[in-house]
Length: 278
Image (tube, rainbow, N blue to C red; front, side):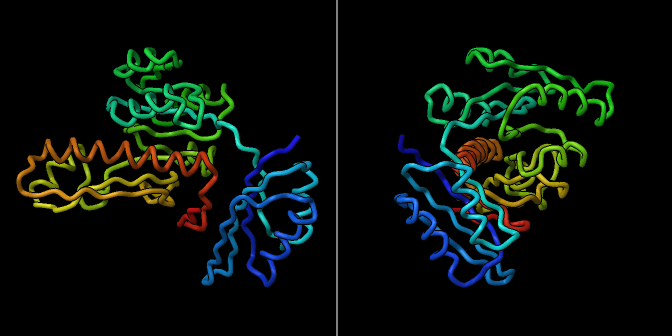
């Protein structure tokens, strides 16, 4: 039976790579439905995303590609299917609500395994969508002890990504290292200029002319991981800080949704502290 696969290749650059890889597909009578490639010349790094269809054995195709690419090649042959995600939340509902609605409309491209909250504020909302909600309070607990409980819950599930849908706690290095390139965060784009509980009020008082949002992978460097998606919204003197906050929250949920679509469709390569988006 004919199959479809996304082939992702990341390796040291070299002459003839596109030809060699394409020949592997040609020799197996596979059709290339879509292809994109990029060379990071500064670091001599080659990236390629190809969608193929035809009759093939996934393991045999993977071995054939390994045989003609550099020894450091990272190759994935992915047969498209809905991925699985876990959401982490605190009290704000805008990012979570948008994801829940997309999930209910079968427009997310992923199955939500569960939602974990350090407050129970959003439990009623989540349960309306028949999705498990786990309330794991952090009161009177060290950050490490709380994260141990959260990780115990997470590890009960098979998942591809953890999405911080306005989860307002800083994660420890131990937590981040347990799930490398699997945690995605969304935040306003004022950092590091306006830090604290009310950045929109600070921005209003400074008279900023644009606000925005950034979605990125989580690393040990707080809010400085590889960026997946961003957007900006023009603002002016007519807006109060609460108007700006509402506009900013709309931007956050849109940017997070855009980032998830890219990641869930295997369009993102991490290249150091940057991303290659196909």
